[in-house]
Length: 367
Image: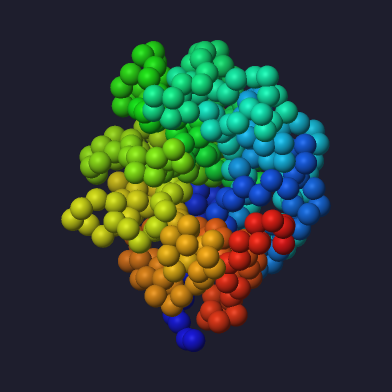
């Protein structure tokens, strides 16, 4: 099959980072790091994606240094001597293969299930202790705890630069801690971190400012956000372009270089009267780098991936057309790259027939 995929394989620069193409490996939690320490198998997993011509790898979520940040004993940490040594080996393997890589810094907040962690006796943390609207499972975070977590993100960012990573992504989506501050349904505070739309943004602003201050000006900071939550696929942070601008502008002013705009289906318009998706509107409003994501490489949404749906010509053509008109800048691919490390290389060759269709069994191994 002959396709014009030139737009996907144009170089791109974010801040001072030069990328060889527009394909990003989306972060996907794998839980193959016993004790929070990524080993040789994790390094080889990411190296294979660099060898497969992924333009930028964003790692699985890695937890910042807070006792209640993680939601599993095999999710990698981004703190502590052993874990950071493991991540340094990952960076070395990816760079040796010509790749670029960023860690995703993460705090799971109230999405954590304490019994699945090493600190089951500790309550999970959230702005109001709400795991979902009306469902309180813990006391609200103290201001002191909030400030400690902000510093933990900054420490993670500084460590990432010191280890040689090419930037960082801050996870502010999907109903995890930062997103819990954004969402009125889980943030019922009445202090400086809640009580109004503007105050619910403050935690994220402070995290971004702290990470920006902890790193050099040329070190890229990407912020991932979403409207939908794991707790509510229909949840929305804003319903108009004007409200979206009020949401994004403070984050830009805090120091963000780009946004990873998470949707379940990238092709769906964000607002009535325009074909622009979430990433398209983000770029239009901020002028910053916009990454689109959501069922890329799958013929339906990501839930359909579990029944083996795979790449098709229509979805690839649509992506290329949107890149051609600069709706967004980068394209994040999840399960298609998880299944087939050479997904980008096969696309570049126009060899879609050779791309491995997603198989749910792939989630059980680190291939």
